[in-house]
Image (tube, rainbow, N blue to C red; front, side, top):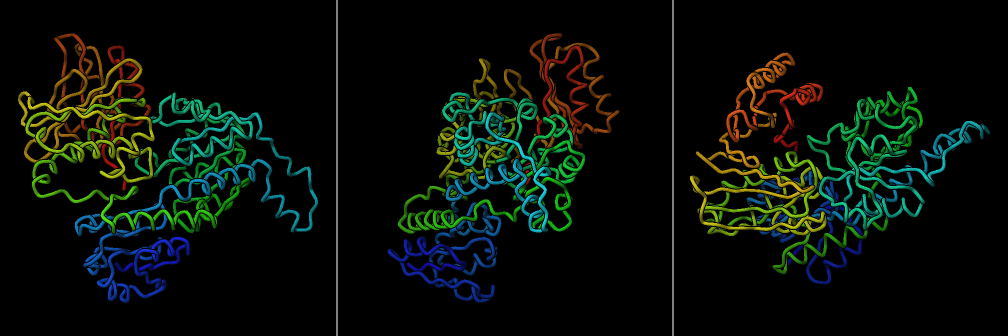
Length: 527
């Protein structure tokens, strides 16, 4: 078969491809030239510059696979590729060590004020007392996101004799313990850490994860590191904290806008800033090239790719039966992740009714996609869903039953954590997902982008007081659903709201005498 390499990749990857197929390396062509020659190729390899949009994909009528030599696939139209039956693969693990080492390089550079001292010396100064640093031995490092990179950092930080804390709702205490890491809540990590490093994808839930409120809870003089994604930190808040001395320093490799022209971090003191170099090592480039090349060979030989980032097309029969329930399954996973609050070791997806007669694998993948969307930068699909779940210490159990009560088909997702079971159930009616079960409470509602859920004692006036508090905060309620176990017993109320519920308002509602718990559920994902 013929493979087109459209951007420079390490020769080791090209050699691997050439051992099996005909390879043309043609970087730097104009867009129209690529479109003109693509009909002759079975596989395409790009990095980040060539934009593989719907027009280019349509031109590649023979394309079987597109390989992205790197992690992100923002320059590939995944929907168009999937519709065309083209598998898209990337290389998410090749840069793990490079990113981990760059994170620690920034940590050392900030702790010892290397950049400022270097600049001072080059100006002809000799001011040793100005650049007294701090030792990292014996200090506490907080890692937000204990994936592959987070684990690599933890291993190295322990060798540096640091105490390591981590936040990751989808990693068990046992699994964290294997890496010598103590799992804690986010607030505890902020308060105990001398340095905090972020390793999460950018999503609605993680945008500005570190802002003024979070900085206020951090230790005075703490160090902040971001080698993950621009936008995970509030750059203005971080710059202000550096200026007033609240933060001791920051090492930043990624920015909201790249290049970061106009970023307040450029003028902030005690910073080490690098131009998105996390994966920029010679070794990482070789590993990435080999990783993507091996997957291209797998796909061309008819084998599944380890890191496919788009799900295979469903057969017409399966599509007719399962496709309407895939958005519901993803929604249930996203809802469960927020409703449960803590990680679970075992997830059970019960497929009931007519749907039980079909393969449930796509539904499980969709559930995991929703569950893990804020915990991994890898796109979850049929190929990698099980592996990603295992990497997080999650066992997924599928159960099927032909009985679905009043429903033609019903999906129920449940998991046990800290001795209690969390359950979320849903169905599809009139072509749209509907939420029908929360734990032991039954209801019927169309999920919305933002919902406020309360568990409270069924007492007169409780609902009215909550509504008044939201109204005073200018939060509009578009729908309300109430389910209760018995009159004046326990109840669950779900409010669909048009605006984000301020954290202070949610806490005030939680403080009401009859209210036992409150959740703000956000189902609108950022892409």
